[in-house]
Every structure is written in structure tokens, then in C-alpha cells.
Length: 323
Ligand code: ASP
Image 1: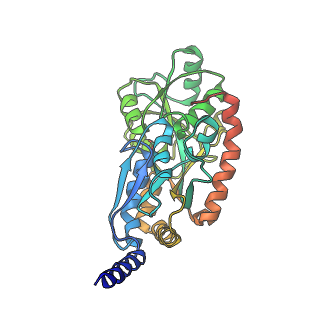
Image 2 (image 1 turned 45 degrees about the vertical axis):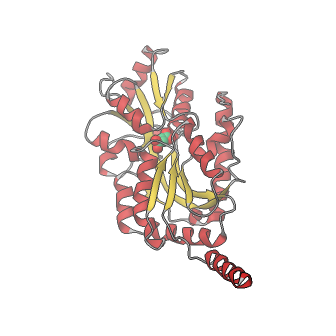
Image 3 (image 1 turned 90 degrees about the horizontal axis):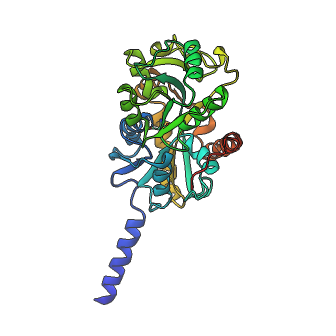
């Protein structure tokens, strides 16, 4: 009897080990507040990713704070079973230069699942900000040195990086106001509690199109074709030569996630990136869905490594650190 029970238990364990992945909902951790640009990418992706995950629900968990490092740290330490993922942006490559005690190692503690999109940024101002174009903004910044508030999503966020480069390019120090994401930052900008912000088009295009914020420039090399943003000049064409910032988003799992789950997730991601509705929604917000080799896990990892090497020196030159 005892022997029979043991055989039964072993068979059960073997059956569980072979259970098809996924057999329950998968959670994507977004390391910023709900309603912001990273969150929007995640929610749009979740809608289509499930098709390649046996139609399992894909849930979003927002863990904002500390420029995205709290959420990323949570996933680095999560059970590597394929049920907890991270969707993060360029912050994966800026945090190592900014945080002396980063609680994870970007290149060692994650499985790279593939990149999702590239998104330019926009320089915008509160609706009550006097300048109506970039030339006027330059004069206003000169006249208001020491009094300007710049909203961002914390050290290491895309808005932080763009704002940092902008201050360096203008030779002006601004008072940065950190939020858990640029959704709450946008709320304060709309209420004129902060002056300016540089943020992904996926968060700003709707407000720009509705005329609810002052829009000054895009950080792409050439003007965008998205109707809402087509009239916006580049920073490069307005005197800030070479000022290009493109934010990218990628998908990650904790290190040690089983290969079968990683393969399923990568296949689901590839399928999602070809979904016409996903592509249309992203393009309408100024984002470009990745079609190149960065959707391969190995190339995704190489790209993030090259971005760490690209941004690290510029950030260290600014002398900004968090513990
Ligand atoms: N756009 C934000 C950033 O500056 C993050 C977010 O709220 O999605 O990184």
C-alpha cells in the first residue's frame, strides 16, 4: 500500500513537471505607475501576448518608485517559474551607472526575452508656461535660471535621462521633481504644479494633440510622421546638435526560468509584435515596433549591454548617484 502511494506520488510529480506552460495567469511587473507610457505598452502587449500563451490572462502589476529599480528588483528576486515577468525600458541600462547599491545585476539576474519597441521623447511644458516654441523656451529658461522645475519618474527613468541631457545641453541646472511614473507627473504638469518634462510620445502625444500641454520638440533624428506629432521640430534642428534619445522597451524573466517557458514566451512575443492591431496602436502613439534581430534573446542582451556602455559615461559625467 505504502509502495503504491509512493509510485502514485512520483507519477504526480512527473506529471506536474511536464505540465504545459502556462497553466495559469502570467504577471508582467511594470516598474512605473499605472497609466504612464511603460504601463500603456505593457497593457497593449498583454492583450496580444496571451494569444501565444494558451489564452491565459496576462496581468499587469505596477511597482513604481526609485526610477524603475524597485520593480526590476522585485522581478530579479521572483520565483523563476515563468509566471512573473518584467517589462522595462532604457532604465535597464541607466540604473547601473546611477545606483551604487543596485539590488540586481542587469546582465546576470535576468533572462532576456526580446525587445518590444523604440519610442522617441518629447519636450513639453505646463499649459500656462509662457513660451510657445523652442526659441522662446530657450530665452525663458535663460531668464528663469534657478527657478525651473523639471518633472521625472526618478533617477534612472527615461524622463530623468532626457532631462539630464537637456540640462547639460542648455548648461542650466533645474530642480527635479521625482514621481513614481510619468502618469502622476503628467497630472501635475497639466495642473501647472511643475514646469517642464521630457517623456515618451506614448504618454504625451494625446495631450499634445488635444493642445493641453505646450509642446516644444521631439528627440528623434527626423520629425515624426505620426499625425499628432508631425509638426513638432527635432531638438537637433533647433540648435541642440546630436540630441537624440530613443527609449526602448523589452521583456525579461528572472534568471533561471525554465528554457521551455522562455521559448514559449519568446514565441508569444514574436507573434504579438506582428499583430496588426498592436502595431497600429503603437504607431498612433509615435512608437515603432521592433522587427529587427533584437527580438532574439541573445541580441536583446547584447543591445542592453551596448546601451549600458553608451549611457554610463554621460550619466557619470553628471555626477548623479543614488544609494
Ligand atoms: N516615462 C517614464 C520614464 O520617465 C516611466 C513611466 O511612467 O512609464 O521613465
